[in-house]
Image (cartoon, rainbow, N blue to C red; front, top):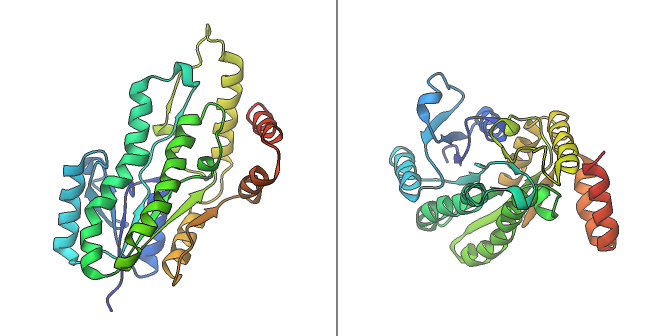
Length: 269
């Protein structure tokens, strides 16, 4: 059989680009997506398609281009996403809706577009890139946590719905990795007259430090390859620092208020 065809949304930078480069080196035929192809005239690592996951027509056009070239799609990596921080009270609804549009509705748009082809093939693998933040409500990152938590849950549902068609769905939750996510993240400003000024300011600084100290995104790429090569993938996977993964275990065993205090202590360190 020819090399597997892989589509990675949000493949022009960060974790998506790292996954694409790694899988290309391993012999896969990789397509990535970006909202604006004109920004990447010299991109040569793998093939890029123009796609805005928020727009079903844009998604369908990109999938049509891919299928016209390859006539199949073996793996979808739903990676496109956006960061968002801020006190809930001070975060504009427009930005909240945009985060859900990109992080939750966007992946669903792509899934809906690729399922008919995977069903015709009788095979396919969908990997939804979520976040360890999706397992817990983090202060000043509640919207981001909610979008990723929603994607984790919908993965569980979808997995059961498509099982009879030979298609598998799973999710991979990364912790903090050194990427440029902060550059594209919406963050509510730290206003001098805000009641959240001190607390939010400290938390925002901690968030940026955690990303800067994050691991190599290739770790995520290696985990994606492991999932692709697994005969019967699990529902949930995590990748990241041991303490970040252990935080999910702690949530299961600690009283809620104790766990809440741990999160507060970390965010204000």
